[in-house]
Length: 224
Image (cartoon, rainbow, N blue to C red; front, side, top):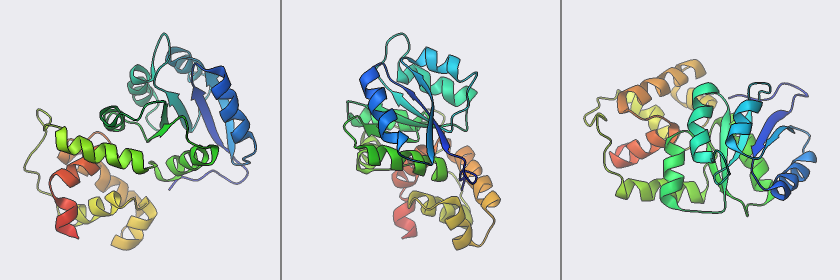
């Protein structure tokens, strides 16, 4: 689990074309001692240029922006800055869109009417535990399972070891890397290695993809 060093704030960037919304988020976060807003952009291209000079820990990314929107920007962030956490902000709560964005690398998805405390908790949780799941993301992922066809080339008959199954189940229960390590009695580094191996074996590109795979193939039910 990654945590800020003593007296070091979580660095946050925001990309949103509405200046008033950015100002509101900036004001709300300014009272939090462990969060610092380090960059603002009004479109994805401007954000990507800023990322050449600043290194945020978490990005708040709007979907609808001129020049380069959030859907175009997210894959570029993932390619160039794979360790940065990305929280999508949107006026919409379309399940298929949420599911798609979580699969291609978003760490959370919030509607813009979320209160400031929820945004703050999402930032902290994504930074420390990689993902912030809420009722919106959970419903979207489960809805996606009912309509999503298997990806072409995705392995169907994957042989997972007992330890891999246990780790996958605990990940689906939103346990942190340290909690999983303690429960399974292995090191956090080994948990991360197993997570990477699970992604390779299942063809999942993200934690959201692993959750979808686990539910789709009945792994969670089998292990309960």
